[in-house]
Image 1 (cartoon, one colour):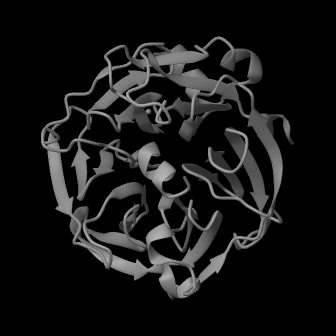
Image 2 (cartoon, rainbow, N blue to C red):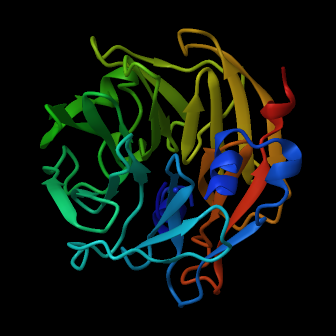
Length: 319
């Protein structure tokens, strides 16, 4: 997930609802809204999205730094009263953990809020080899939070011990995986982890690839999808199914790949394009639906309303 003007410069979250959230079938899913309005205020430019287990949806704003909250059963989101974001002009990646806490990144900061908006933690990343950080996306595992840096070829990590988040520190300089590639063009975007947190998948717009990283040995290798170019923005990993949003170098939309057990190779099985996506940046999955953010980042400040589009997950029809 990232700002479009930088991309151009570089080439160029009741019983009925509980039942729906637990295991909605195709007919049930169609009863939910197809479009969600994040905001009707000018300049919001939505970027990241996460949906908690109870169906609560959170969307971040690249344009203002605010967070918005709603529910998959309601087509309208509202500002989330997240304290401590007043000085952050942009919020990009946003994710909830198993306890419903809201983690988000933007600029140099990682913040954690409870479901009422109370600020629980703020962590600041240090400058990288190319200068000030521009934190892009994050993933929360059982023992750490990993964060990508759009401005530096660096992955940051904050260790979680006894429920406490440690400092946000540089964890891996990824340049060693492809030393001949210009450092300033790595453009690290989405990041996901497998269930036990032993492997990360990191999207790099610049290299137009996804990179697999072992969290124990920091070994880096390119995910082989048999595609000449596959550089996603935001991603979701569910088991061995990788959901990715592509918006550069390919028709805008959701691309779904089935991976091997080790997350080293895979095959793209579905491409969802032409759904009136408006520069999609990332997505969330809940039940049998995919929720895709329409950022309008290609024409800032865009034109309200700013929306999220819901589409059926085609893998649900697969035994």
